[in-house]
Amino acid sequence: MNLGEKIRYFRKVKNLSQQELAAGICSIPYLSKIENGVTKPSEEIKDHLASRLGIKLDSMNENEVIHKYVDLFYSLYLRDYLSAEEKLKTLTDSHSQSVDEEIVHKIFKSIYLILAKDKIQEVHALLDEVAYIDSVMEGEKAFYYFIARGQLSYFSKDFEQALHYFLRAEKQLDLNHFQEWEKGYLFYVIGVTANQQYQNVMTLEYVNKALIIFEKNYFFKRCADCRIILGIIHLRIKNFDEASKQLLLAETIANSFNDNSLLGIIYHNLGSISSHKGDSEKAIELFSQSLKAKEKDPLAAKVMTISTLVKEFQKTNRPQKGLELIETWREQVQTDPLNRLFELYLIYYKLLFTNGEHNETVIQFMINELIPYYEQINEWVYLVDFYPIVGKYFENNQKYKQASMYYSSAIGTLRKIHELGVTYV
Image (cartoon, rainbow, N blue to C red; front, top):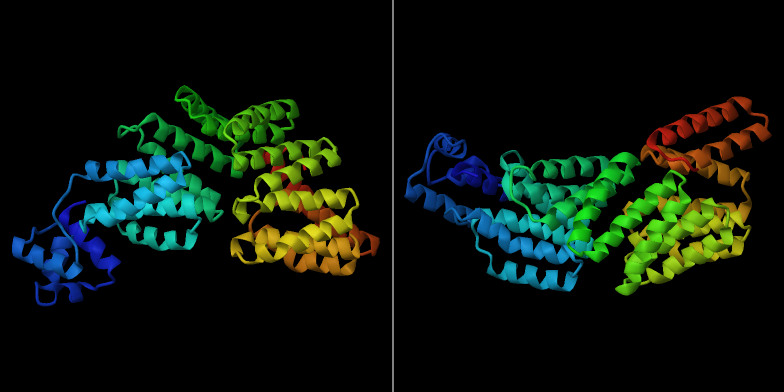
């Protein structure tokens, strides 16, 4: 960033107009020329502008600034959140008011708040401030800015935007020197994000690249992460033996580190394999193990397991068990708007357990609330189950036009999810 860009950046961050900043210091046209890099201000004017902005405009060695923060990110990478918290506090207490360090601080604080604290709303504000210089960002700063933006989009469930930012970060790899673990982390998050969009080939490519780096550098927990994703992909393409193999390899690592969070994810996916093979009893056992292992994890890590366990209770005709599980978790799910998908899912199953599948109350809820929301967020894998239920209801009531509409939607949705590479529903 040149001097003018720094001044413009902090003027906007502090919500000052050019008139407010220039008042008593210089003319507005002169300030505009400074901000656009046309004119270099005198030291006196520069000092006055810096004083009004409450910053230091002297240049610092940006690489030195960033490297102080990369060590913080390394703790996050290792999931050593206590160490990361201590490092952030030290950096916060010692960081200067220079423009360079202020921007870097906001980027890495954003990453910390997402990964260690799950504080999405705070990060929106921090990164919106940094976004003023998006177009002039370069080097390692750009790499980590795109990482932060990608993570924010990912945890906000905007996976398309997340992938866009992570791929922009990848472009920085050829332009700058990065450590192997930094590359491995980026490849992993690209793979994980591609997985959320059912891009199987892309997921396999990037996760395998990450796995090679992690194995070479003995980052065993990250190896387990990769094998879990590989297991999910093989489950998706109905290669159950390979899926089990990858997940059991991950389980060995998780057990060696007593990592319950990892075990929770592994048991969930092993439960999914059992479910798709038709062994509901084993699936219920594994989903229950998953919830127990995730006991200390945030709700976001549990909602999918809760939902799949509820579905297994419905498949095995255990409404009382299903209702008990729903009542245990529904209130917690309601507290976070990001869980709206799961909240509607639990309401649907509560109505289903209480009234039966083809009850009018259930169908009206599906038509008016459940299906429109799932259509809005393109949750095709769920919709392919929901459309035929409504279609069958209208068919049973001799409303063939409405029945045909929902059956047609089911066929179209089935086509879409097969295009995405999902071979089971």
